[in-house]
Image (cartoon, rainbow, N blue to C red; front, side):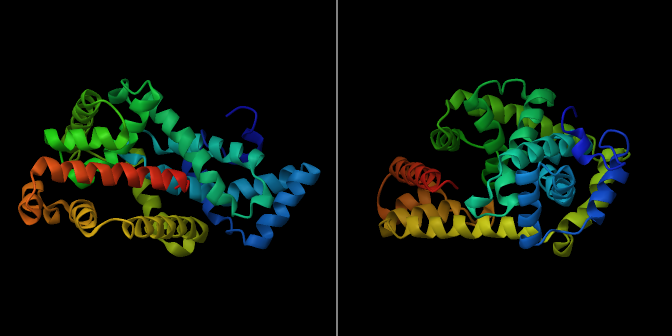
Length: 294
């Protein structure tokens, strides 16, 4: 990395010894709120690079945690962490203590943005994602497909409406994602790559709450805020709309998802009308969460 590489070198290089670098980062203690504030004061007022370096190193494990969520694209983990670290350093320069949030809460957006840009440029199966709409679709569809399974024509329309993209784009992107899943399935039995072994080696550390308390606090805070806002929104709905939304979307797995025709019979309306109600609720909820910056 150019320009900011001195902030994270400390004798360890992302490109020249990823395992050693990450192990060193994990050996750094998590910052308390008071320590974090003191370091940012030193950095902002005195341009103290030692303070900046301590902030960066103490958050590399958080970068690795975020990068792990992109592991399904079969890109090298060290590259994902390196790109996330660039985002972390951009966040460092823009962070304002007066906002009153922990640095990780602010930095996560910059970390994800850099990693997503890297995935878009390098994942061979997603060259289609050249517009903002396609990029939004690409990253949302990977998550939605885990809830929906592979989609029928009605669900393609639902996703297109929900993400505000063309149905043809959903079908095309779904096809590309399906190809990637087949690729991963076929390679599952092969010898593990160094990246795969690194991912497994660090997975336990990433899942250990004691290893990175700030990341779990951030995720828990975001989840709690999202649940709270969804609950607030659901209270505004009439009983029928609420039941349709909950029965279709707030289920533990696909097998528990109520079919459109079942809800149509329950309320004496057409399946198309159920779909319209569901789509309206999803669009309104999306706008509600966007307005709340979630």
